Image 1: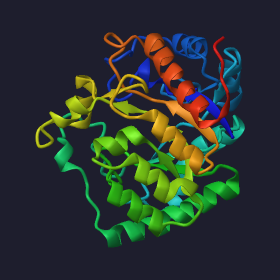
Image 2: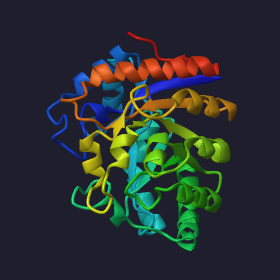
Image 3: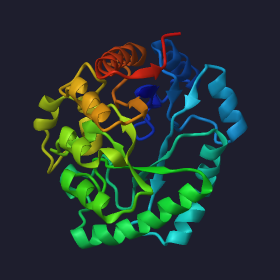
Length: 302
């Protein structure tokens, strides 16, 4: 089995919290991503939005684009309007040969609103998820026909956060809707990462290897503290520095024959968690887990 190792730029610059690395140049992010050993990066706010320019910037550092977030609004939006809304990013990702588009449902999200406590997020019942699933399937089929599959990102602060909600969404959608598996977000939402892989492994199209500090998460007051408050407190970190067992998680993915990108993503304050240092920690822990699970992989230290 083959894996590819990528990293998200959020360790260097946080688009939702500009005070975290807002001054850090894109060049620093890309050069240090490659130095740490990664073969790809996900899209961030400082990246070019034209395919030729983006390819040039990435190739200068021997990197490729290994996907990126799309702020979807299908929960409230008309399907045809959503197709128009995604067009520019869809064309960009097709132009740089991205493996998939990461779909995050941002209709009613509180993930980027520091004043909104975790307990105030939008919650759907099962019938609402079924209705949403029908729209999401049609949207995913459209994207696939255009040449770009999607991976739906369950995420804290959104309408698809909990283990039950992911189960319900997978049951309500067709095969065109891939799953982005993020054990860090799932653990934050009190879910079971290993059971998620066992139940939905064949739908997993992309993997974020986000680790968590469960002592910080367990001490949060969800009635008064927000997702961004949790980020600032240090809820997230890279594999090898947190509470999750990535040897077991990667082995579970191997047991489901998952092949594709493993992306280190950890929102941290770069002033407290040096991005290059933590990228190397994440790379070492992830490659150790991949080795133990029998993967071969692209992405060696430069």
